[in-house]
Length: 224
Image 1 (spheres, rainbow, N blue to C red):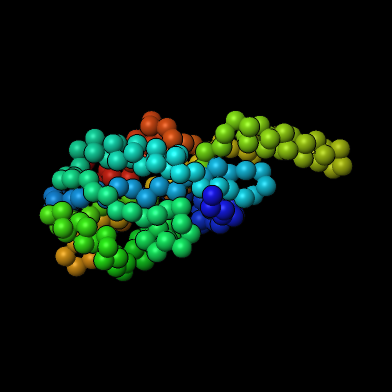
Image 2 (cartoon, helix red, strand yellow):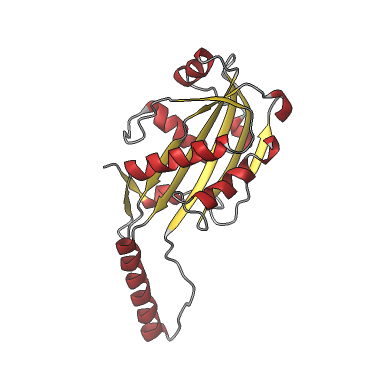
């Protein structure tokens, strides 16, 4: 399975406090009426105490299916859903890397993205003017991993109390985290027309419908 540094997974500015943002670069929401939803790029991992993490193909596929279903239920002008193979499990995948990089973008930088021809052509060949791309990156720990981390955390707090006569009662171990990032592009030109994001937060589980629905409703509020 794919190994990735947990530090890199979490190294997003303002990870804990960022608010969701979105921006139109051209057009208005009402003008975007022929949209193809490209099946989301989902990158879900476990996140373990040794600060390495494994890509979870089954969890990623489940997350992808959940997002596809939820987005199609939000009342957006989705004409059809199409599939593109991003090969998320392959660290050398060019399309996968391009989709993953949507996480790091500001709206200012997103404006100048040029969508890869493989994605652009897939949307155009399906008779749609616009394509909607969604990247979801998060983690979900199993019960054993979480218990191990909580044990380590308690031990560190006790040691701190013994040697420094102080104790931190805050909780640092979290069971899951999730963020969603999206781009709408013009398949005729390959240019971005809208970008939005709901940065990763600990309150959202990538494998739980209720939280994902909340994230996606916020992300696509301009279209509802």
